[in-house]
Length: 163
Image (cartoon, rainbow, N blue to C red; front, side, top):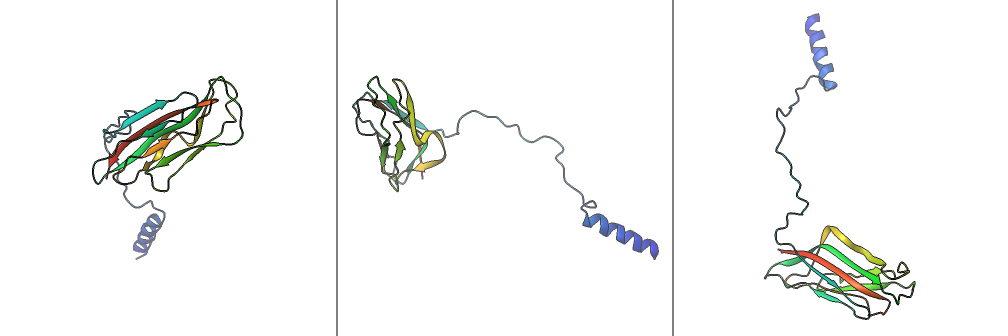
């Protein structure tokens, strides 16, 4: 009887401390992982445009097929200074249409101290962690800031279409 009590106490103690259960282990390694450097979106397309001073750029993404929306995966909206740059502390803005909420992206001109400097708009400086979904059935449009002799627009939009 004492042996049964000791054995039962030992089993309960081992179970309480996680030492009595069996754990499954992988005998061989899993499937190999390969990184390609792309998002795997076979239908992704990009539109890039670089303006000249005193011209506001507009990029219009093509309309998707019926029932689909455009998803923006990569977005660069920036201004670059010309030789006629004048430092202004007031931000200028890139705007959009056909995107729910009509987002806009401010960019400061303060960083444009001499010719050749580039300043990206807040939230529009490359790959997006979460794509921006356009309105269903419509192609989003991105519009650069008002024309200015001191800077020009640089815009890159990469996108794919899906339901």
